Amino acid sequence: MHETIEQTLTSPRYLAGGGDPAWVTVPLHRACGWSYGHDPLMPRVILTSPDQQATLRIDPDPDEPWWTIRHARTGNQPAWKATFEARTPVEIIAAFTDALTDPRALNAAPPPTAPLRQAGWRDVSPQSGLISPDGVVRVDYVTDHGLDHWFITVAAGHTPGDELWGACLDGTTPPHLIAALTRALTDDTPVIRDPNRLSGLGVRHRHDVRQHVPVEAVAFALEQRVTGLCARRRYTTANTPAAEPPRVPNPRRTR
Image 1 (cartoon, rainbow, N blue to C red):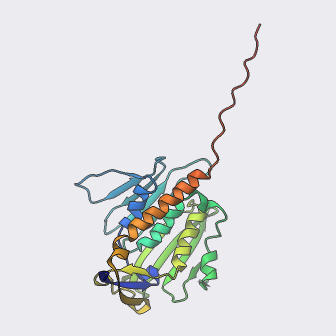
Image 2: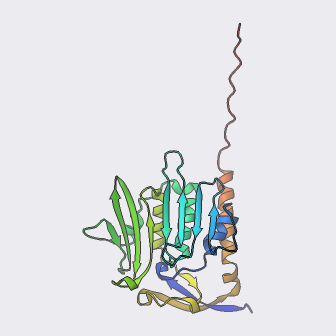
Image 3: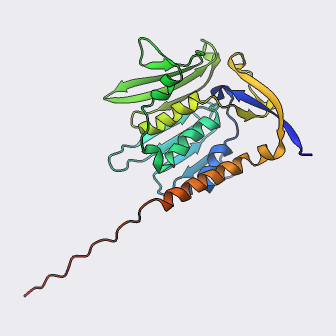
């Protein structure tokens, strides 16, 4: 007989609470080759991409966003930054980092608002933005100098104490990454949480189902995620045409 453990299947996922940061950090390191530094005296995590262009920083500062993702300028793409507050579900942040580390994600990416409109989100008037059918999530985009700056606010009510989490993406953030984030906001697949660690915030809008699941399913979920991303990386590498060797001009005869 398989051993089981009680877990809660929670939806919508934007009300599930933060979750385990390892859902984001471990795949970045093990599947995508991001390196990390370790300072036992500092309560923060910093991961750096193999090309040294991108960083992920988790800094438990109660007055600042806990998650910050930065990318340096590359070619025609200006530098950009995205921040997420402490209670942002790790599954939503992972959708963003998965797209960041997947070269295929750039292909045929929909406009960032497309997943929201397809899921029945309605326009916010007179601002430029959309709100979820349950009224809990607002996605606003403010145009400045021809660039759209994106703001996500998740709140269970109308007072400052009702806000659960927020995210900000500056105007130079690649649209396909914002689209990955908006798709994650509309994903109605429940996420697993420890029932003893669920927040009471937003419970009126949340659907929780307690059930016993095999211990293995919980213990190896992260390992399966890493394996899947490793397979994605191998597929991408195997299907990337090899670079042609540089052409060496024929030596010219001189007199």
